Length: 633
Image 1 (spheres, rainbow, N blue to C red):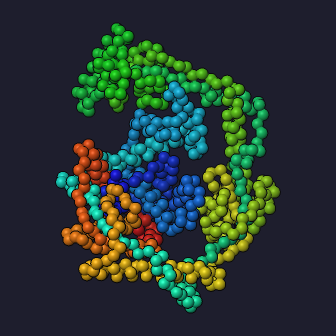
Image 2: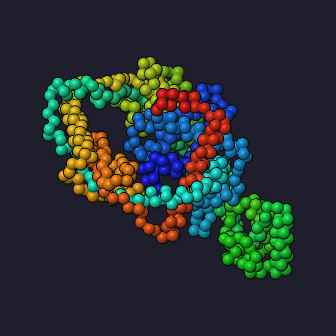
């Protein structure tokens, strides 16, 4: 609802700007805080640094992420100085937040971690028809990202803990009394306008240009007629997937692996659990009272365990399960907080536990059913074992080959014959490669940077082996280089004339529109200003954003009022503001929702300000120039 506030109103954008805190789940943050003597520092946060190597690695990962989502994206845009600096800014903010998290010793509980995992749609989709998480598919999913369950859950816990740094501030932000009404009224205000657009196409026929003018335009705008820098390269790729294809596994190895990993190929033990929860207060007296009440319920159940459902409905303070007689459904190890889990998995069916304390209060627990762990037959999991064994052997063989690959491309710096002969990799050729790259490994930003490095071009030596996606090594060598250059006039004469005519047409449209604006403000009657549109910030009309912003910024104390909007190559819009209407009335429910959104935005703006305070508190420094300012940040 408030998206167009951020687009159309600078003051409100500052006031209501929403802080976006990047997730650390799939990247992790440990690498940002470690010192490295292999690369100079590019930023400092307290006593921690971010090195150029870490910056490059993070930016390469960001480019690869975008390329996976948008395969046709122009790599030059992603690897521009501005884009690289934006990555550094994100790294700095992540390090500021993790430093604050560690200083405040913030962490999250096991139950919150488990809940966060199950809120991720991809992971939640791994549940079977009985609601159990398929542990093997879970491990496979994480392995594809380079994680084990333990490392992924540790990274997620770190991310959730880091979120706490700003959530305490964001969740307590309050809008200043009396501001909500005026802000909402201004946002939903309706303005009726009439307009006329002066299109460059309408002035094109009037533009007669000479050959001398076209040549002058060509000379004055050489950047519009550039041929890109291109290279021809030879390259070789060591691919773990191809290494795996070459590995054969015999039946003895498969059976041995199955026997050694039976627990992996078994359904986990699970239990159907119900409980009665008595919440405890913060002070000792409240804790003691809650425990005493839970023990009294436990004594009743010791005498009559069949009353568990009845007592759960009448006594339990867990709103999510009390109405179901305390039933929590089927649970596996790792799904509950540890004290609760330890007690639940020690009980026999229908046995009632002693009172158990967790961060939620005091529990009395009963297990109603138990499903034991069941091993899957070898025949059912043979193909999976085959893939696991092959991949395991491939990783070892790949690591061994990777060392040889790296050494050979370095030692034989102007040829790939040796590495091709020893490791069986194919020498490939790519022609007319630009900085945007070509499909495959030559689209990797780090590989392209190395190829187009000045030393690589001048020396035509093999670039050092570069890892791509953790499962490929690449080396390349420039064999031909054509620098960027301005195309000859004869090649681009037709294009130059079209561009000049387009520019002159746009200028003519701008002049005609501005002349009409001055005439209207002087009281002249204009024809053609009759396209009537109702404009507001919450309902975007089919108008350019620049026109909407200009209309909503106009002074409305004397109507009609006039303004003009230069639309660049699209021409010029002449606008007459005829009427301003207050926002339509809305029901109390919608008004309450809007007010909640506004208060949330205030909280997020305060969190943003808190991050800026943390940057100052930790004496944050960015040690490289901001390409947008030409100065250090």
